[in-house]
Amino acid sequence: MSIKALLAPSDMTEGTPWKKIVLFTVPMLLGNVAQQLYSTVDSIVVGRYVGDNALAAVGSAGPIYNLLLVLFMGISAGASVMVSQYFGAKDREGLSKSIGNCLTLTALSSIIIMVVGGFTIRPLLNLLGTPKSIIDWCESYLMVLVLGIAGTSYYFMLTGILRGMGDSISALIYLLIATFINIVLDILFVAQFNMGVLGVALATIIAQIISAILSFIKLMQMTDVFDLKVKYLKLENRYAGTTIRLGIPSGVTQMIFSAAMILVQSLTNTFGEMVIAANVIIMRVDGFVMMPNFSFGMALTTYAGQNIGAHKTDRVLVGARQGTLIAMGTSAIITGLVVIFGKYIMGLFTTTAELITLAKNMMMILAVGYVAMAITQCLSGTMRGAGDTVTPMWISIITTVVIRVPIAYAIAYFTRTPEQPTGSYLCLFISLLISWVAGAIITFIAYKRGAWKRKGLTN
Image (cartoon, rainbow, N blue to C red; front, side):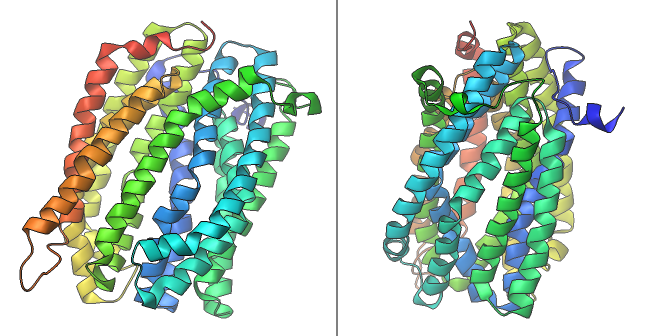
């Protein structure tokens, strides 16, 4: 196969379903691993060269940054569904207008996030009770990320558009380039120039801007699939409105998830810097372990979108079943490896023995839940690709707001002792495991009901 053919959009409406899904997932999985390297390298460099408190600062800033990104995340999710369905339907005009409207919406959302973020960062950090020892670092880190949000927004949007058209190879290449740049700049800014967490944030923004530029150049070259003209940048209700309508549930989901994470982060802060730092390590490792689930889920969104657009619902059912089973097996293998070699993996982030042991024990609690998350991500991805973004939203609300947060606080409350006045830190991970398992059960039931089959945009 030639390089040109390899980089061409992939039509997932023909061929063996599981092969199409796996071939699309592999480069996306590699890309997601590279994406996770952004935050992981940040943590390793900061933890090694600045200290455990700086590591805690980077981790504490995460939930707030995610909350500020919800507007863009919603637009991106709606765009992915639209692009895949119009591509599957072979509707050149609809695809061109969808992409043009998404580019304009991304610009508007970036401006909003920059303005809102600049005024809310410090108040949110104070509201969370962020320890004084790390609050200034948190603010500096977040301010740089917010000011560079346009690069981040277009980076995710453009690679998402490429994936929606079945091109996961180009997205991988640009991501690998960005990851390499990020790692080099991390070491240069922090280890050589002693810029601390500020240098880490700056390295991330620069790398994402470069990747966004490369993705845009690739998009401009795909004239055989759609037209990228100025007239298509004008917002039209049919396309911009549909993007927002499809994206609002995903945006709300992310907002609620981020708000819940902030509440959990507030609880985490009561256990002190050591638990905060251990939680950062776990979340970084968790990002890698969860990658197969996210990757197969995203692949099934594109797969379902293209086939729903082509009116091939039966093919969607076959692909969803095969993709979910493969994702579950992959997740089980990776989780087993992390459990076996957990001590060495945690040791990459810090040389503090107590912190390594603490993080390893936390990961043991979560281990079983990753296979359950494979079910949730794959079946939710299928429903989203078909145009049903509301059902996954409600499932996320139930598992996060109704199950995870109350259980975490309840366990903390009932495990209080004179030695542990704020309760046991294990509440953070026991509650997460319970919510993952519950989410898998609820998602499976919703998928089997089949309401998502009637949500196609091209019906």
